[in-house]
Length: 208
Ligand code: AMP
Image 1 (cartoon, helix red, strand yellow):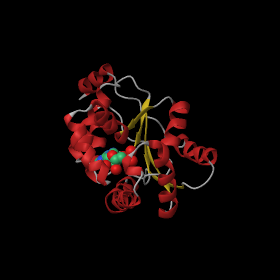
Image 2: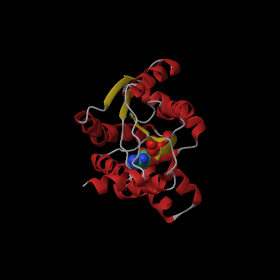
Image 3: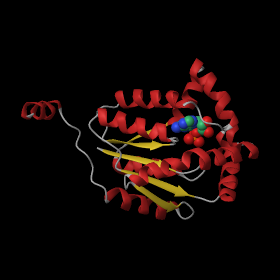
């Protein structure tokens, strides 16, 4: 399996690059932002709670997003791999992701961080806000809060993956194809994992 964490502040280009990576590597795209927006659109209780937090540009509680990822992994057991977009955003989410993937006999191969300076992010998000219909993309104060939350809470996740030698930073300003090529080079340098089959697991148990 190939599991990639695509990392970076809001507006860094994670969504655009995710679409290209899915097409090339046949991965399942798991964006916690998209999963939360689907809950809001469906009018669920979880969606109602999450909307208030998201509109403020703050982080939804860890257990909520971890639960959504757990469900998504369970319902995509045949996937060739996953691209995690906007998750993990805290160290607690990162450790939970390792635990959940280990339960499926796999793990994260690489974390790719797209780096873009704050003024460029504000410009991109305000532009996206004209068509995205996302309240959190339309107000500069909220956008700045999201970027500041990224720096204060989320950036520590980079350190978590650095200690596992899985962290790779890329300049997120440049041509879409150029950045895509750089991400692919990083991915291709990491070996994929083969999840343990029940037979293999039994074999291991017997040899103990
Ligand atoms: P995104 O679409 O990734 O920019 O996420 C939009 C909003 O959803 C964020 O500003 C958070 O309020 C919430 N959100 C998305 N993913 C997470 C996550 N992994 N942890 C906590 N909150 C999240």
